[in-house]
Length: 175
Image 1: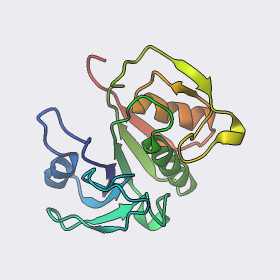
Image 2 (image 1 turned 60 degrees about the vertical axis):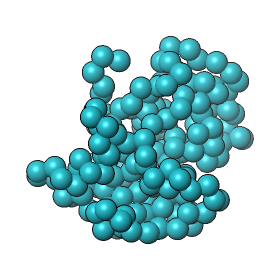
Image 3 (image 1 turned 180 degrees about the horizontal axis):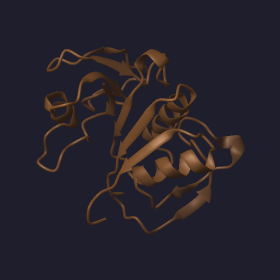
């Protein structure tokens, strides 16, 4: 059983949606979807996004950018497939951090599908977010441009934040 944290950026090498890939995968039971800011298809721009149903699969889409920003125990068993943009104030990072925290509390495995850092993976620039400024747009003290992939960030959050989630990162080839 798998819950998938994703949006329109979750694509396979062939361009197929991760939702469709996992929904059809032998030996995988995709049981629920979780959407960050902008919704599962990346088309919503309001402050609070309600949970809904996916039209193609019929699965429940749990919004993590509405009344609930952290998954509940009833929602968990998670694969995270989100494309970060390479800067700390993108809310997808906090969504992933909250997923790791809740999964650790309930001893649920998290698998993060790594994605490239689109502005590069070697430049680190800008001031650090200090502890007093941490929020949904600054999950952990880090510079504005962090220079990491989403998988590297998951490992950083888990280790430096002492989250203790059962985390596996599926690394990219050739990065």
